[in-house]
Image 1: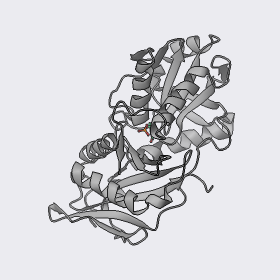
Image 2: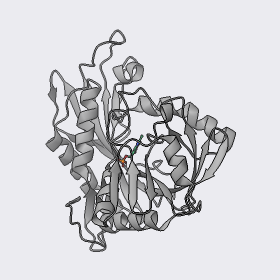
Image 3: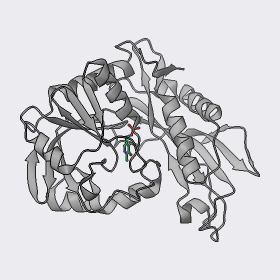
Length: 331
Ligand SMILES: Cc1ncc(COP(=O)(O)O)c(C=O)c1O
């Protein structure tokens, strides 16, 4: 299987915002758009996107996972970036239409169709550094993906970054390209210096998230993760895993978690940690590196609670367990 997200379906769904209104969505070739070199997005980063998946069940049906949540987050990101407001019903229909078109290309589990709605400011206006774009483009790209764990789910090594932040504090809840650009140098340095897989951003000792996933600590029957605020992305997988944890009778603590508490709890034998995200699902974390010292999380291996929660989530996505929270949209 090719690298995650490097293969695209040849067509996408697209609508444009021009003269104050959205055009009727169309299905167009995925490589058909052109942009003026002065487009707002290319200079002032007026861009946001989403990532969700469609799953094929054994009865052949295609099912979108928590589409409403992703649509709502794209609308929220658009608002916080002063982009035109997409319409939830229209965007949902665009997603359904393009996935239906490629229903036969949705891979069997453990693969899926990764869906990437993207919204960009298109106005050719390099004088608008402090003004919103008047025009935009919203499109839905599709990329068939395999199992993220194809190389085995080896527990990750995370470098704890206690000085720098992933992005500006008020931008964390916006799923915008600039935040990923901002996190890239710390991630590359962490890879080169301590062979870390990811950076866990903990500005001032506040445990937030990694470059592309949320962070969960599991200590016995309790699952601890940062309470929602504007500083980090409100992951749909995070919300789903916490819901499943509650269903299993676990105590869910959404609150501040300091690096000191994290390291203290990680030193206990049964402690587990994991990253949650649409791509990673729930990936175990085995090692935390803080101030040049390596700390194992519990045994340093994938723990039973992490594997059980991941299985419970996959079972719903793959249609092997009942969808009691109504998370799937069958199309
Ligand atoms: C910065 C960041 N945090 C968290 C997540 C997890 O979000 P979700 O579970 O909605 O995929 C992502 C995933 O895209 C992300 O990029």
